[in-house]
Image 1 (cartoon, rainbow, N blue to C red):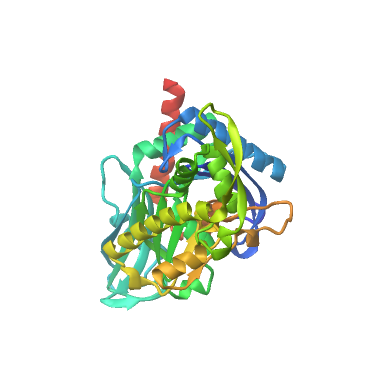
Image 2 (image 1 turned 90 degrees about the vertical axis):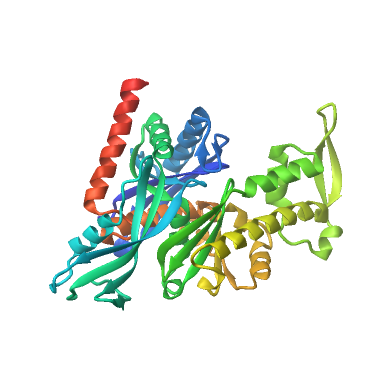
Amino acid sequence: MNVGQIIAVVDIGSTKVCSCIASVAEDGHFDILGAGYCVCFGVKCGIIVDMDSVCKSIAKAVENAEKAANLRIKSVYVNVSGKFVKSELINSEIDIGGRIIKPRDLEKLVYKSIKKRPGVEVIHSIPVLFEMDSMACTADPVGMFANTLKANVNVVTVPKVQINNLVVGLSRCHLDVLGVVYSGYASGLSMLDEDSRQSNQIVIDFGGGVTTVNFFFKGVFCGLEVVSVGGQNITKDIAYGINVSRSNAERLKTLHGGAFESFDDKKNMILVPMQEENNTINLQQMPKSDLNVIIQARVEEILKLVREKIDESVFKSDFARHLVITGGGSMLTGMREFVSQNFKKPVDMKRMEDFFESSNIQIGNDFSTAIGMIKFAVLSDNIGIGSQNNSEKNKREGFFKKTINWLENNL
């Protein structure tokens, strides 16, 4: 991408829609120009269930980002998430014939790994580990001689109907889709720096509707697992456990909630707007510990399910020496320490504020997917990391156009 080129992204989550606008800088970096968000009630576990509600949230989030950036956008990258996103490592091999490996050979290798799967769309096809003439290659093989070239390719798929709904929703907001990015992949890109690329990483993204487990082999996205429990479940537990509305439960979780129940929490009192039988609100004092006991129980369940997913995967828990956490749920007080204690591993958590030079723009780790999508767009355009080959890219662009044409002709 050229310096100064504008990138816009929309992250559609189960609790809110986030939008970011950035300008490409030198050496693959970017500057955030504006960010916006809006609460969202039309998505369940990553799946759109109320199109009108989602469209309103998209429009408001984008409008807020445009106001902050002082510009209008027409096309965006959008995320996809949920339990129907699948990842599979495919072995692919091509004959080189003793000549120098060229970039088009890598495209051919990746394209060969993509099988026709009815009803699903390939959104990522990422070479993880190359092998030349039965010898492992730890670097980019382009420019070296070989007889055969092999690779393990991480192929990520999502149901076409899920992408259709994303394209339709954005089209109603007068936005074209430039590309689709898996949320967990984007979150990992936003979290991992150059130092972390020297080792394997497990990135746990605590979302509103789902919690995803994402595996990175020396910085390369190589697999995923999904747990269909997230921050929304914590909010529901609070609402039911202390008899408050969902909105007040979310507020209590954000302002006072923590993953640890400390001794001081029993002394610290918080005001709780409890609902009476006649629908009136009665402000009562409650020990902070009562709130955190509810939160801790659900967090323990989520981490138990995450551990089971890791142990059931081909990577296992010893794949990485330490974990990385992100997403809105990671911002709970004490979450980093609680995860570390539970898994008996060091846990890293990078602050999204590090991307913002302007003090007027404030975001948290609930923007990690949006930041990662911008990074994906920059990297994909420059060096093809995580992107499809040209043939596949053209096919995807055609798919989006067909969807929009269908929308115009049938709605």
